Length: 417
Image 1: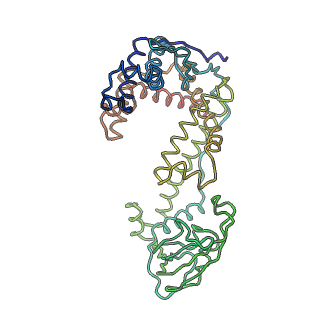
Image 2: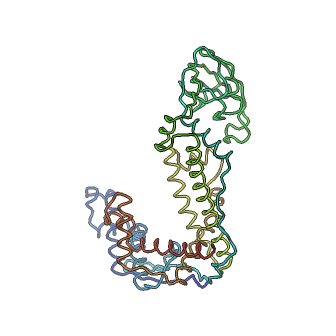
Image 3: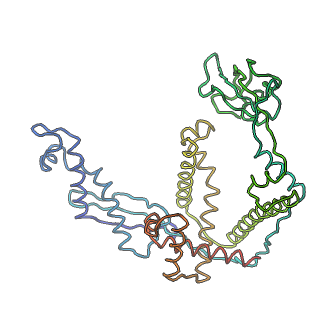
């Protein structure tokens, strides 16, 4: 057993009886006993008929939380780094004994985290990059205008009705009306957009295509037939570079193309410098983490992966998907996604331990007044009260922890410039 793995036995007496009582109140609503309405059978009669053991499973679920609170109260220096493993080692109608296997933060031996020989590069922006960005801005600001009598060309937007058929059956999710498709965007499978080039409004086209090999599992490499009708063709009208264009971009002070180029160059330099700084920080953390010694338990990595998967699931929900749909579309399994996230999870845990140890080594401390001021600043930024912020975080100590980690990260950054 590793040094940071400990076993604790917690015995509950009164709390166990309370848990049994709660379990009875739940169970009695679910069963019918002759002579009593559902939910009214006395506890003694219930136990006589079904046995006290019938309450154990539900009572254990209630009692675990009480046992864990008792464990933490009796071991105030204990800081679990992952959800503990719990076993029931003794159970009766009068008490229950839990065995908790608790994994604490592993021992970390901090190595060199300053003077790592990593330098922060400065961004360089070329004239070509500036010109390309201005062209991209023109494209973003372009208007779509109906193309009267013209044929579909690359770059046009075709407004279409379409239906897809696989094995003679209508393809689920493969139909739409008045769908705006930019030709050349590669939004559809190969051959679809190309098959519309040269067509005009009113044309009806049949496209016999094949789903690509890297498509979703149930459709890859399968032949598909699309029936398409072109309702409208729109072409992009790119704005001229003039004062109206500058104002539309939000550059009120810009009067000439040269002025615009200066602003765009400044913007691109800022974006590049942000990216370079992120890369610089990651290199510093990577090297400093390589210099430290730590043996991280598999359970800690698993917990980080589960946290990441939950975050990913929330992101999918914002896109109208869930994990099951994601697995179906990608052909991945829960185990595949877990495996793919393990490397990033390991890095996150190592970096977190590194920054925490740097904070200790640098003796970073904040007064209550400083923490309260930061909480007030954060609450104002979020548009909520300090009380709402603390309630969301659970405790103001989370604000203090974030401040500490941020200061430690700044020390690592500054120590290598």
